[in-house]
Structures are given as structure tokens and as C-alpha cells.
Amino acid sequence: MIDKVFSTPQQALADVGDGSTVLISGFGTAGIPSILIDSLIEQGARDLTVVNNNAGNGDSGLAALLKTGRVRKIICSFPRQVDSHVFDSLYRSGKIELELVPQGNLAERIRAGGAGIGAFYTPTAFGTELAKGKESRQIDGRNYILEHPIRGDVALVKALKGDRWGNLLYRMTARNFGPVMATAARCTIAQVDEVVPLGSLDPECIVTPGIFVKRVVAVGNMRGLTA
Amino acid sequence: MKLTRDQLAARVARDIPDGAYVNLGIGLPTLVANHLPADREIVLQSENGILGMGPIAPKGSEDYDLINAGKQPVTMRPGAAFFHHADSFAMMRGGHLDICVLGAFQVSANGDLANWRTGASDAIPAVGGAMDLAIGAKQVFVMMEHETSSGESKLVNSCAYPLTGIGCVVRVYTDLAVIDVTPSGFIAREWVDGLSFEELARRTAAPLQRD
Image: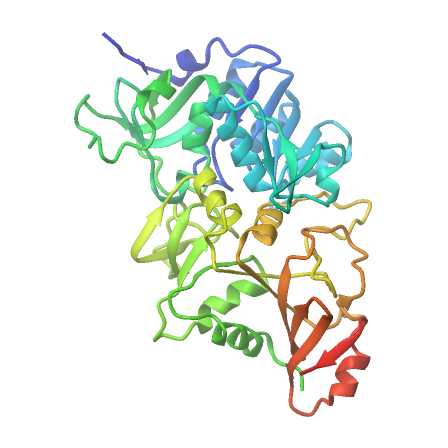
């Protein structure tokens, strides 16, 4: 029998190792798996590389993780926001490395990581400073740069509902990077509001099929929260 | 004499045809949504996974799982769809979006766009979806003030700021004029009442032709 349900986030995150690359879903605060992030802080893994669209908002969630000083590097598209003061001060004092990636290239690099693609040519960023040092190529008259996949040791994903096989449904724009990141890590851990009985999710509507998910933790109603 | 921000937004909105799939960049371009003609069906895309985005959510019914690219709570229209990030950027990169409207620091006479950083040494760089939109949409419109607050033209021969995309802008809407980017450079299509073409050309830091 397959049962991917863990009863606590602490158990689900117990074996995250130092030096791990951690993919974290979310766009701003929508889709941020804040309960899993709190457990990762509690668990204490360090020297982490974090992949997220942003670099934390306010003082909770991803910002709280950065504040611990255990994140060596962040790969993101839009670190600077009105409430990104935790990242801003780490960056200005040279305590965190930033790899800035255009948002679509970030999504596609993660997709490629999950789909077994070796590398791909993308037109985005050609001729800009974000293409420096990257191989370029003209194909059918259009210019492209070569981008490489991103894979995680762990992905932390927020979803609305899951079942014991790991099938997931999301909620509105909290979906964002979740389905793509779920495919691209060795161990994908989903925080869901609710674990429902196997067979109760409509197979036509499942967004992430369970094969991509290793662990599921129910955390109660987290709908529409700002963090 | 200059157009107000709302007049400029209304001018851009007039050129968006019925049936268009459109992405409005953050900042000034989001105002265009308030001026879309009611008799046209225009589908707004938001990079974070919505087609058919509606107006900003009214006070009291905000849901922070339903936000726009600027992270403000929004609504959805009947027929709206959600999707993940790789699909969202496939819509841009794959040439499925008809129009995107972006703000800019500078646009050059060959259509280069600079809108993501000024290069100031203490600034933290952030690019978001700007580069993907710039090269992805079938038509890239820029909407901006004609001049900086210190009176320098934002239409230039060559961008001084770091580029977002090369040769990607087709049309610029400013508070003074509507200017097309063509293989022979900037061509002014219309300008505000009370402004002569000669004065407009004088305030544009690249050669300007008229129809």
C-alpha cells in the first residue's frame, strides 16, 4: 500500500541535509508553504540554496528562513519588494549570494529539471547583461541563449488538497510554481489544507499527479493568507 | 498640454482590439485596465497564472490566493483560467499573447527597451517577467512619460540603461505623443493639442519623422 501522508511537518522534513537545494513554491506570499518553511527553520539544515520567485516578504515564511543565516544562495527573479528588508540587508552586507534569473527562464529551467532536459535555448534575456557568459545561437533567424536545468534535493510546495498517493490540487494563483517545482526535486513535500480519501479527487482535475510527490502533510485551512 | 496618467491609459486602451489577449505590466500600464472599452472582450493575462483577470478586489473581499503580478488582490471574470508558471511563460515566449504594455526608463530608435534597472550601484537588481514579456508578446507597447522628471527625453538613439530586450518595442505612448518604432526610426503618429511637431521633435532625443 502507498501512503505518503506524514502526520507532522517535522517528520516530513526530518532528513533535509546541510547543503541541500530547496525549491520553494510561491509568488509573493501566494502559494508559500509557510508551515513547511517554519519546520525547516526548526529542523536546522544549513548552507542551503533556495529557489523561489522572490526573496521573502516581511519577517515570516521565507524571510524568516533567510534571517537564520542558513541560506547561502538564493536563485530568484524578483528579490526586491517593498517588504523584502530581510533579504536586502543580507545582500547589502554580502551574506547571501544572488543568482538573478528572468521569471520565465526560472520556470522553464525548473520544468527542464523535472522533465529530464539537458539544457535548452531561450530567447529571453538575449543581448542583456543577464546573458553574460552564456552560450548563444541563432536558430531560424532568432537569437537564443543556452540555459541549464534547475533540480532540487527537496521541493516544498503549498497545495489545497492531496491524497495518500500524493495527487494534488491547488487554489487559484497560489498554484504558480508549485506544479513545476513538484516535478524537479528528489523529494517533493506538499503542505495541503486537507488530505482527502483516495479516489475523491476528480482525475480530470488533478494538477500534480502523485508520482511527483513523496510526502504529504495536512496543516488545516491556509486559504488566502498573506503569509 | 500633457496627458494625465488616466488620459494616457485611455489612449492606449483605445488601440487594444476586441478579442485580444493582453498582459499589462506593473506600474503605469495597470491603469489601462480601467479604460478598456466595455463593448470589447479583452482577456487580461497575469504572469502568476490567470487568464481572464478582472479588476482589483473590492475592500473586504480580498483573497490573497488571487493576486496580480503586483501582488494586489484581484478578481476574475467568467471564463477565467488558472495555470502554472511554466505555462504562463509559454504563453509569452511562444508568441500567444497579442499585446503587452510595459513601462520603460528608455526606448531607443531601433526598439530596444530598458525598463528593469537603472544600474545604480546600491540598487538590488530585480527583473521578474520583464525580459520574457519584452521578447514574447506579438506586439510590445511602451507607455511612459515622454521626459524624465529632470526634462530629459526617454526616447533616445541608444539606451544608456541596461537593456530588457533588443528591438522589441513597436509603439510608444507618451504623455505627449504616439510614436511608432519603424525600420527607419521613430515616426510620430499623433501629438497632443497645443504642441507643434517641431517642439515634439526638439523634446525627443532621437530623429523623429512625421506621417
